[in-house]
Image (cartoon, rainbow, N blue to C red):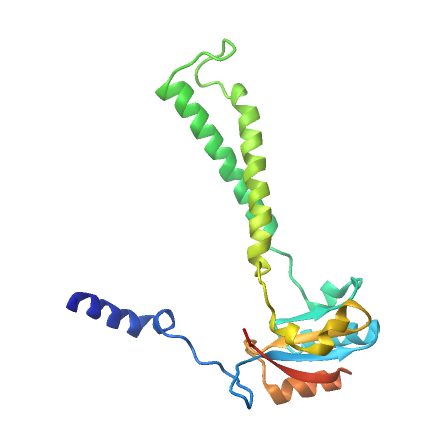
Length: 208
């Protein structure tokens, strides 16, 4: 027991975040942690220009919510190319290598088998399985990688507690900036959104 306690003490010294929950950086008057701040816009050009201003201000953890896709919004937000294609390519190569090792290992080493009269090390009979396993691994990586990069599944979101946010499916546009952003400050961030033309700017609590 003493050894276990000593190990836990050492871990707490070097990795405090693993053993105790970090206190929220910002809290509301009710004592609940702040998820972020949200601003409402009533026109597409306004939210587009506001997104560019938030981008230029150096914010990194924020999003734009719209009832329909807006052309070039990714550029206005400064969104970088996703890493998913690289992840999918790595999965394809992994599946390809697994197929080669399994087939070559069994037909040439473990159980030498003549296939179509070709030598044991011939690669031609391996092609169908190499292709299928590469595609299978790529498909799974695209699905689960997309979910992981998007932070899904998530059954509840703090913005759902903001009543006006429900109009995002009808005729309103919103920009939300998370409190975990290094540049987040309740006063300065609100001033930025006001300058950008946002209305009904509200702090949203992170209530589970």
